[in-house]
Amino acid sequence: MAEEHQNANTIENLDALSQDTSSATEEASLVAELQQVIVAKAEEVKSVNDKYLRLAAEFDNYKRLTQRDQRDQIRFGNEQLLKELLPVVDNLERAIKASQEGGNTDVLIQGVELTLKQLTGTLTRFHVTPIQTIGQLFNPATHHSVISIASKKVPEQHVVEEFQRGYLLHDRILRAAMVSVSTGRANGAQGTDDTISSS
Image (cartoon, rainbow, N blue to C red; front, top):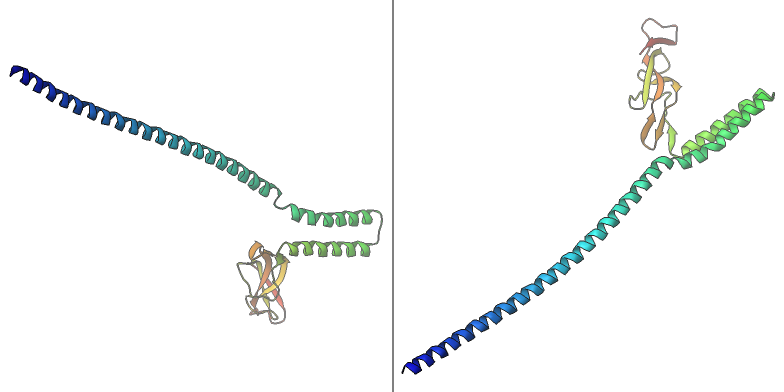
């Protein structure tokens, strides 16, 4: 009987031992699976990190190229305008040389007028246009009044005379025109046309 009890204990022990062994095997396979998942995730992280480093390097290169292009644009943005102005400079130099050699003043004046026409044509090609002034209603956005003049001919608050031409670049004011503005008919100046007062 004692022998049977011993055998029973031994069989029970074997069952318990086999259960412990199977759970240890399950744990070992679970650990192996987890290790494989960790290795796969580590490779994925490494791959994503490599992509990030490549992308960061490409972005740095792009940023450097963009900054260089921007610097070049600032430095050479007016290159085309300057190329267009060089013939004007050439013509002015020719006019000066001709006048120094004792040329006719009429020819000199004609040459300067042609050069001015060439220069204004160049400015027009670059969308620089003169502001209309004489006879126009005074506009403080485009006109700079330097004096006021009483006038019979020009209505009040209209431009009488232009002292310096103003220009627009597209629709932006490049320089306001310096003008004189009419104050209308002067009270005590019936016989005179223009009476000047400081603005």
